[in-house]
Length: 251
Ligand code: PEP
Picture (tube, rainbow, N blue to C red):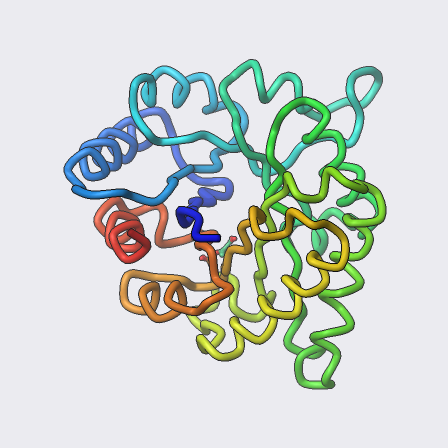
């Protein structure tokens, strides 16, 4: 089944009211000027800016996402933001299990799986990140690591697994300028596809994105791989011309 590719930007902890306004207006104008059947485009922004972006994106094809979500629905969880709250401010997606959350906030496979479940329960599509560190790759553990991370999400989410988006993000490629080769990306994507296929008959509808120093120059070859259904883009999503070129490469 052919599905439209998905290009999602991850702004990380960047932006302010003025620069967000300029970036989003440029993106919306750029996307509107692209002809033909285009890919899906989203930006995952810091939670306080969802309200601003909800207004700015009105009437456009640009979708909104958050960068994290609580595993809990409500209650005494100071500092956390629930999926229902994100939904009220127009979020369609929420990144879960980004390597920066796993590394700096000690998020475990089980917590990431619970976050994906909480997002799905509120009607938000989790973009579940998996990926190996450089040490894991160099010691031949890539397959085991991504399969273990994916298995936890499959186990917790049962038949709902077909509603998620997966992002393969090798940790060594995030923000480093080192990109996985198209062959390395395809190899892991095919592995994840097979794992998801064993879990759901609706595997074909699951987008598997590549993330890790994707940019205007390397996007086309990565996106041409048969199991690469789009990209999760960090640094390059902060510059409208670069992000628009990646979007154009995914048409
Ligand atoms: C990311 O943060 O998800 C990411 C892929 O970052 P970058 O594109 O900057 O490597």
